Image (cartoon, rainbow, N blue to C red; front, side, top):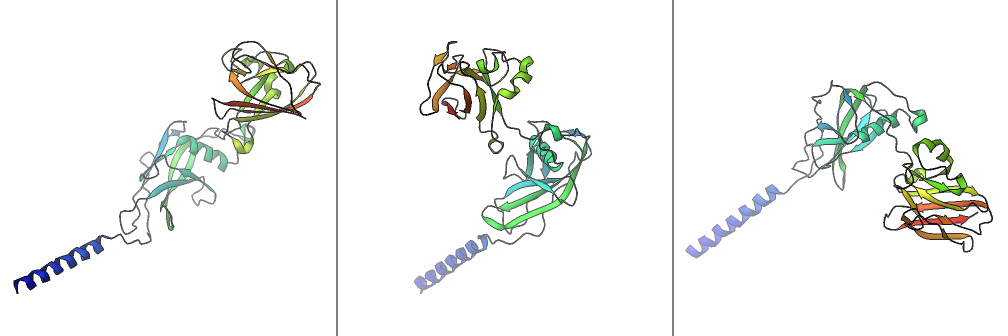
Length: 288
């Protein structure tokens, strides 16, 4: 009898443990509210600056359990968010959402229709609207957007990413000298990133080069002859090269050794300088 009673008690305990475990299992429910707090600095003048952040504070939506959430934000110039841009948080898992100010400045420029410096207008501080976005990864229906809040005095700046570029310096342009004072002279001698490859550090350019003038190297900035030169070798001495079936490809190094093509008959050279790997810079030239 005592043995039977012990078994019954043990079974009851196990059932209790199972029940408690089931009670603790997370049960998802779709949230209906998501509150973004009014910023404490809402009415302060904020001049956006690269390297700084702007903060939004919110509460976690009620998903029925303490879920691991991903936070982001949206920004607009109108309270109805008829047009808006998405902003990634510095730390996506934090309910205190930190946004890079350069990302906000870029979004504001885009919302004003700015595409380059020619279309940029320096505007006074303006009202900028934000709302937070929260979701659980891989649960599409979990996405919820908050109420709208505003920072009332935000001063942006030109922040549209532009293609990077380097310069061809040498005989074709007359060895004018890679200095800031010669910036206008070197404008036609830029190799640029493609518009859809901004930040790639892959630069392209096509240049007309006369026979007997195919000696050059490349500069990443107009800071003088020494600091930002890339060429065929470290030493300040040209090396001779030839095309093979109308093409030339080689590794390039930081230095002042120029590329020289003594048998170049004249015409157009299509150049690509790939500096994405600083330890393996590649120069490719096609004779057109």
